[in-house]
Amino acid sequence: MSKNVIFSVLKMPFISLFAILTLFFAPTLAQASTPTSSKQIDAERMVVATPEDHAMSQNLPKVSSKNLSPMQQLQLMQTNHAMTDYGLFFVNITPASIESFRYYHAYADNKNYAQLTTMDGIQQEILQRGDIISYFSPLYPTFSIRGHYIIDNFPSILWANLKNVSKYYDIIPVGMNRIADHVVTTLRIVPKDGYRDQLVLFLNAKNHMLLRQDILDHNGNLLAQFRVVDFIPLTNVKKFISALDALDMPPFISTKLQSPKSAFSWKPTWLPNGFHLIKQTVNTLNGKTIETQFYSDGIFSFTINVAPSIIPDAPDKNWSRGALSLYTRTQNNQDFTCIGEIPVSTAKRIIENIKSN
Image (cartoon, rainbow, N blue to C red; front, side, top):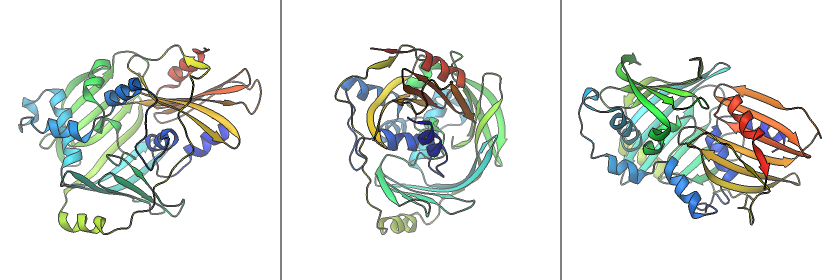
């Protein structure tokens, strides 16, 4: 992917990195995308929890946090986020920015209904009705995509496949704290290697809802924070659902992305343990072919993008903002770029270990 395209994507308002990656890697967003192999289907299942997973976890005992294991607390966190009625006011904080949001969620007839609204600057909204998720903004044309949840601006731990996460992270209970006037239990999720960042989660001690997440680097420095400032029960649930049901959702968008007909001429020969190939696609942008692979370990994600170089023999470039990093190397008249929620040093090592088939 060219550097100009990358940085224009990073400046897109409101839409999260994961949603941007979704737009890049879904062959046709008007339909469910088809992975390029059964192996990729298995990988996708490993890193993303589905509504069926949450329905199964409803059998967990409804007891206080002190009687639950860390894994049970995380399972209840995911279930209650996806299958209860509530409202949240929250902020996302990085060293460079603070963004505030309002979120309402209801669950009825096995469907999710939700509204996410920006609280600062130009008002922008994302609405969900069942598996239809629609984006409304004066900054770009409205559109809809298919999805289980609104993932924009929320921590990915809320829908990660926890069985896969526990293979590559240690989940450590830390103690009690207080967030947004609620008593919380604190869990630290520490990678079993030094190639990714760590999480600190603060869960409501009564309903196990996530009220805060800190992303820390290996030195303990804060990279990004999700923080709930107010949590309220959602009243008039029927009225909220009726209003969403009555809306005319914008049309679904399609992209020209397509799954490759043959294997790429390159491949990464080193990845941190636990990162699996989810999808790979080929895109044509401004007359240039971009080959992309999307990887995730269930919590963090990154992509490798290969495109014809703009400046031959350009020096390596790196960039980071909060938990998001980018590393680019030009080699053999091609730009190799790794972008995602991993340390710059990890992105650099991935790019350094890309070999020709």
